[in-house]
Amino acid sequence: MGRLVILTGHTSGLGAALLDVFVGEPENTVVALGRRRSLRADPNMRQLVVDLRSPADAAHAMSGALDVADWSRITQVLLVNNAGVLPPIGPVGSLDAIDLAEAVNLNLATPIVLTNELLRLTADLDIERRIAQVSSGAARTPYAGWSTYCATKAGLDHFTRSVALDAPLRCRVCSIAPGVVDTAMQAQIRASNVNDFPELERFVEMNRDGMLASPDRTARRLVEHLLSESFGDPSVVDLRDLAG
Ligand SMILES: NC(=O)c1ccc[n+]([C@@H]2O[C@H](COP(=O)([O-])OP(=O)(O)OC[C@H]3O[C@@H](n4cnc5c(N)ncnc54)[C@H](OP(=O)(O)O)[C@@H]3O)[C@@H](O)[C@H]2O)c1
Image (cartoon, rainbow, N blue to C red; front, side, top):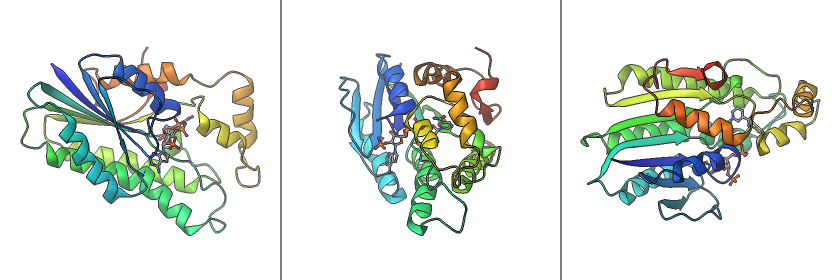
């Protein structure tokens, strides 16, 4: 059996840890989509450089990713939509229009487009498709100062619930909140301004108290769930609520 894994945002944080897990399995061919190259080089990995703020470029990259595979041996395709940004941070009415639109594109429009392109371009193939959207607790709890981030992640959750209803049987989809993970995104939160993000102190405390999950452990648990029998049912989960 061979598996094609398409992963976005592999250059940092959770994505870099996911890349480690995926390239460690010899049956995997990994295609990583990011706007920068990772220094990591493995014989079973290819990197495609694409700025995922452009959904049209993302669609083109999906077709490039599928061209990489040796289809005579692939029985399963995984797509992990991990790339995302938190900014712009601050109250609505104070934000830059371009920043807002680009965050919506990266966090929501591109994962929707990549999901559609994967299902469309592999519709005639006899393979299993599994799609994981990396969501956030912020999809389910509103935070002052994070309205765009909360809205895009909530959109990703609801898109996934809907796809689960119309996906063909050979596709499973799930939107997964990973918990609070020790990555550059958390450092960016702690560096934000309390006027823009009133709950800042809670995140500073969580870091000080050692409450942040490691990217490696989070990536291992996410992949374990992605490959499990229960993946896709339910279609929206929080990694912290899963056993293990
Ligand atoms: N960390 C947490 O506590 C936490 C909690 C809930 C959800 N999440 C979610 O987890 C996912 C990973 O976040 P992280 O914490 O690992 O953050 P991170 O370390 O900042 O990583 C974000 C990744 O997205 C990529 N990316 C950003 N803009 C891009 C663009 N325009 N085109 C292509 N790639 C782009 C980054 O690439 P560059 O290296 O080029 O910037 C990087 O690889 C995100 O979807 C985030 O919302 C994180």
